[in-house]
Length: 138
Image (cartoon, rainbow, N blue to C red; front, side):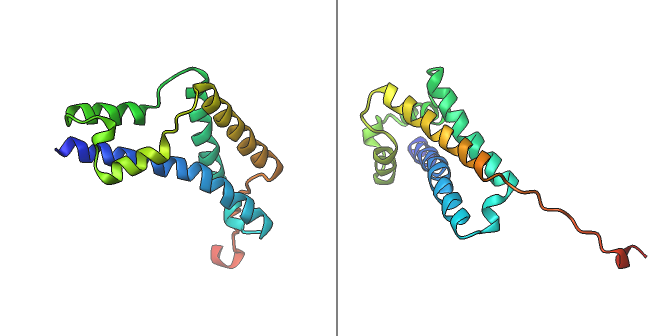
């Protein structure tokens, strides 16, 4: 029974990962329009790009997402199929997994990675410069 809840937690994390990529891109675009400095944060922008590049590379090289594999393994240990998880687990699965051909996902992932990279190039992140106050050095 505990394995089923762990599988639900993995699906929840997986959904959060997807949300970070999609909602993160929307926040970047909105932030650029409204000149929010937080969307120029270097670490946010690099981690955002890295998150979608990993997914796109998995799709190009036909690698099953480790989170998906982990969830399915935990479901097997719990004696469940994906359809037999808790309500929350089934809900998250229905949001994450669509019945489309694999080439459609690969195209979407690569396209989103290109959009994310283009956004990074056209609106690059900024480094925060530490200002040194001379009066504090004395």
